[in-house]
Length: 158
Image (cartoon, rainbow, N blue to C red; front, side, top):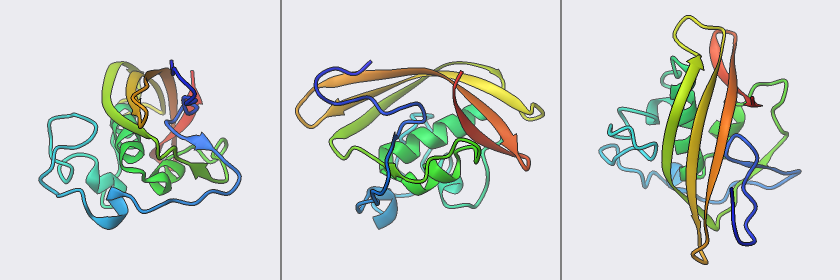
């Protein structure tokens, strides 16, 4: 879990908030070159991995692909994608991302169901962050996902 004075965001890699808006981020300003390695560390380029999901070109086919896309969105400051990929039954009204945290590593531990034909699934992961003051932390979670109109959506911690 987190250390120092930085609170680890609740499950879904974001902090719920009543009215904050996005500040300019890499994903909004186009500073993520299409040939740059994807933040989810899949080994693919951003355009070959999470970029098409973030830009609405395609949808994640499995729960673990949605987890990777959500992590990348968080690492890039893309709260719009995070909110859109939250299950409507539990989606917060807005999301404030902590600009002091830099997410630098995602480890997918395992997936239960959440495949191409499954209606639900869980993904166990660890996401590592570093704050501007040098403090580090890890967010560990077993996340629940369900399909809404055939698309995967984040439900919360299992």
